[in-house]
Length: 264
Ligand SMILES: N[C@@H](CCC(=O)N[C@@H](CSS)C(=O)NCC(=O)O)C(=O)O
Ligand SMILES: [Fe+2]
Image 1 (spheres, rainbow, N blue to C red):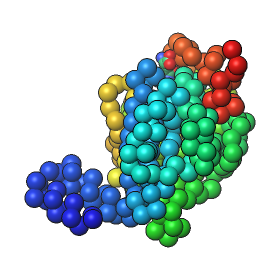
Image 2: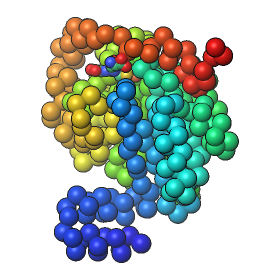
Image 3: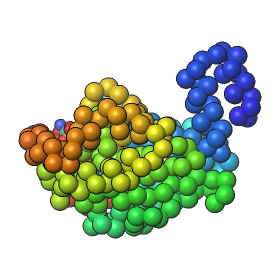
């Protein structure tokens, strides 16, 4: 199947298509689909293992669950895990609703987030779908700073990292609530993201400027915040003065219990 689509791409000599197909072949037939939620500029990711058709979703949003379920069904995927990179402050997670619609799906979040989920993860854990040798493996890296419970997920075979709100394209997550710390965030990004190979794709949790992905090398060179010294970075973050997310008072309590909305 790979060889077929690879040769089709070669014939059309489309470079972007070619690189996608090569990446797909190298990643043992696993694939990633990036989805966007417009109100809060949130990215959700569906990652699937082609052989077993098992899949996981990262950072689903409650308002786009119907769309995501439709894609999962159309692609013939079995959704195993709904993973949150952290307790979101700007939107309600879709994990709870997904679990209702797809009962075999289990919710996942870091232990340090303090939020409720079926499975708690810590630094160094692996999330596996499909065959351990040929399926999809995500390495969990604890990357606090935006919140104390933030995790990033490294997909080594896919040469990719899902950074949530830790590292954004040419930016990073704010550090002024949910036990955020600019000093901790600086350490997380430099120790756990910037140590990955330069060619790794960065899949962020949001983008507010119309961009979709970046690479580790690009962010190391061009991220205006993270190319600063630690001292200048912490000062810069202190002076950011962003307005609070509109949904924070509703979203944080709901996300502490898997996005289940309180009875009205
Ligand atoms: N205006 C939005 C909230 C925007 C915001 O605060 N985004 C967060 C990530 S969601 S917790 C952030 O870290 N932004 C960093 C930045 O530099 O923009 C809303 O009302 O929802
Ligand atoms: Fe966030």
